[in-house]
Amino acid sequence: MFVCYAVDGTPPTASECNGGVLYLYGPFSVVGVHTSPGNADFDETLKSRDPAFGVRDVHDVTVLANKHRFDLERTIEMPSNNLSVIYRKISS
View 1 (cartoon, rainbow, N blue to C red):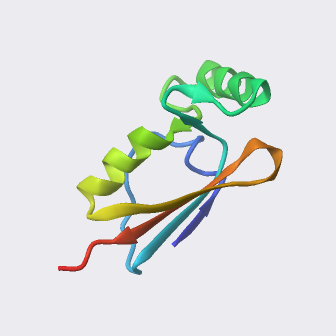
View 2 (cartoon, helix red, strand yellow):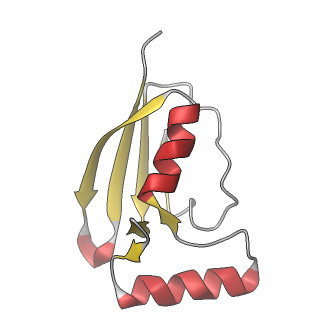
């Protein structure tokens, strides 16, 4: 499953992923620190529209992914202060 720029605009819940890889792309914070001032501003804008929205922290997303049997495989820095965050389904 590939999710691009959707994690920040939705409440933190998990969707069913039928495949073995979950690939997230977009702005994230890392251990509570935004990757740029622009991402911090974007986070505030989203939260002003709805407190459930906002830039997600990689740690928080990983905790949620783990609950659904996904392990963090890799985080890759991307252009424009975005991240690719890749999870792999844990084998039964």
